[in-house]
Image (cartoon, rainbow, N blue to C red; front, side):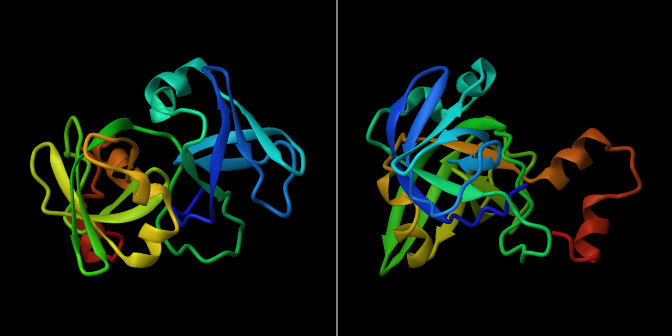
Length: 200
């Protein structure tokens, strides 16, 4: 489980359909731990002082933006949440729902406004949470296939959002609560119930 608060960014040393090797920017690691790489939960299989290694399953490669990435590109990294840590973002599983597209980017002073396009926005709610490339963000101005997010200078400067442009591909994970609600639409736990009780 992750929070969507990016710890580090790092350069891809080598990527293939079966493995991704990234520069090691962490002081402490252990084999077998989960690390979010651009929002994708991967298992650390090996590391040394310079590089960290992850195996990629065929399914993961096919449903994420990994298939579009090249050597030298920058990815967002977050280690798994520890019990007792603050949940500063929102609950993120690291399981990508789809690859979205950057539809537009605008800047006002030091703030950036992104519009993303997805296949359907039925799992988004106004001022709810969405995870883009592993970053916990708040969505608004939701239409049938597009939504906006506002990005503060700190987030923009410390993630790979600054490397995106129009038509860039991004990993998108919709909020886990919304996904459970959709699957169990007959449940007495409704979106209104969650709003009234401060969950969304």
